[in-house]
Structure formats: C-alpha cells, structure tokens
Amino acid sequence: MGLFDRAGLPAADFRSLTEAVGRRVRVLAWARGADGPVVGLADRLAVRGPDAWRFIGWHEVASGGWDAETGRLRWRLIDGVRDDLVLDGPGLLPELFRERVEASIVVQERLELARGRVALIAARRRLGDEHAPLTWSISRHGGSFDSAQADQADAELARLRAEYDIA
Image (tube, rainbow, N blue to C red; front, side):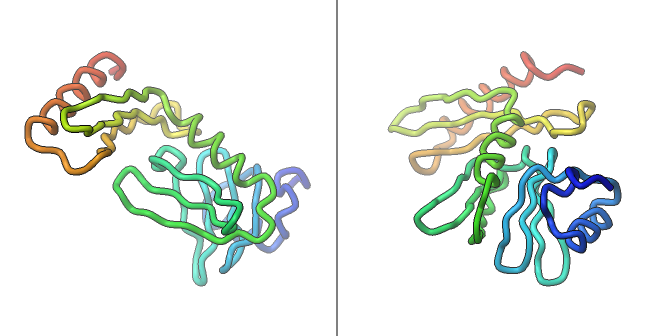
C-alpha cells in the first residue's frame, strides 16, 4: 500500500474501504461525514455509514453539488432518489464530485416540449469499466409530462440510443 493511494485517509478507514470494495483502491479525495469518511474514488463515491460502506457510482448521479453555506454535498440519482451529507472540512471532495459526474456523461441533450416542459436525456458511462453499456435516462423538468410529451421524450431517447449505442 502506497502512501499516495490513501490521500491522507486514516489507515484503518483505508483498510476497511479496501475490504468493502474487494480490491485495491486509490483515494482521490475524502472528507469527514457524520458517520465516518466520505471518499471519492475514480469510479464511485464511498460513504461510510454506521454499519457499512455504501457506494454510489458516478454514472448514477443525475445532478448534485456542494452547498458551501450549509456544508452539504447533495445529489439526485437517475432513479430519482435524493440524498445529502454534511461534510466537515470538505477539502477537494466537492470539486472531485463535480469532475467525476461530468466525466461520466457521454451524451446530454435538452429537449424542449410544450407548456414549458423540458426533458433532459443523458447517457452515462460507468467509469472504470470500459465494457459496461451506457446508462440512459430521462429527467423531467417543469412538471409532469402528458402522454404526448412522454412519447416525444421516449422517441428522442430511442433516436439518441440508436445513434450513440455501439453494439
């Protein structure tokens, strides 16, 4: 284990994280959360809870960011689940969060619909696994979609998938 693999993460936390991941890891940035460290790895965010680590792939994050006033790192996953963490001394973790989420985006297109509705269509790649298929999602903005708007968004998603997905 090299000193730079830990990026200052305490040795016991690093060992625990490595065991949870099941392979050697390289810490890119970390901060202290309420229940323990919050660690940015190349392919995911690792959050130490009271009993175990949980992992959020960068490609699963639809949106999020750092709120310096409240000291919170917040995010919304592509499945709609929202979460946030208060960080003590965030260091470089907020910048790493933004960079890694952006690095996962392969395609992002904004589709303007009727009545001020917007569909944001995105394809994300699983960082660290070049053979994984793209993860496609549609985020709805401006309210619920009627059936015609949903059909239009689905048709645009299908068009983009046909254009960008490589079998």
